[in-house]
Length: 128
Image 1 (cartoon, helix red, strand yellow):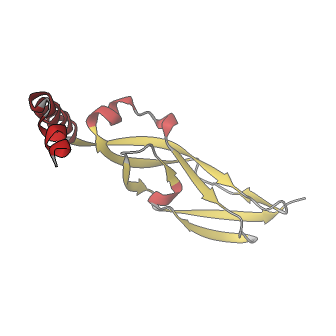
Image 2: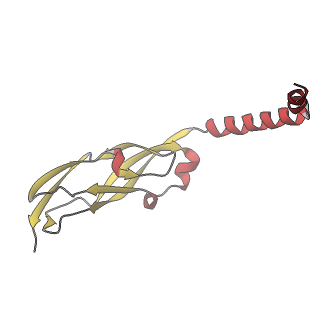
Image 3: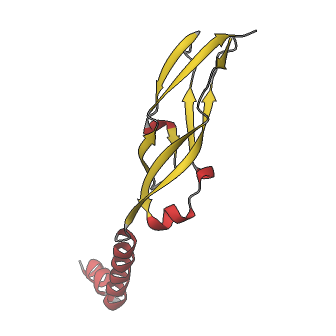
């Protein structure tokens, strides 16, 4: 029992100071206001079947609204974000693809709030 008493009470003023400093750092970090910023981001089409090719007017980019800490969003650029659409199950003809926040690659702490347009229409034709 004396070991634990010495372990806790030895240098108690330094331990209390460390605890207060950690609390102040944590409260400063978490109290930073959240912000929202809009970005125009290109769409990347992945896993397009070899026998198909995109035809018609496929959208090249979408508009994202991203929420996060203001310090993070100040450092963030459109190049740090990416929208990936997996077309592995595509068939010839028209296909309606719903864009979801899961398709957007964002850094930790950033959350996609809105994607415009939320759906894109793609047309596939048989290729060579």
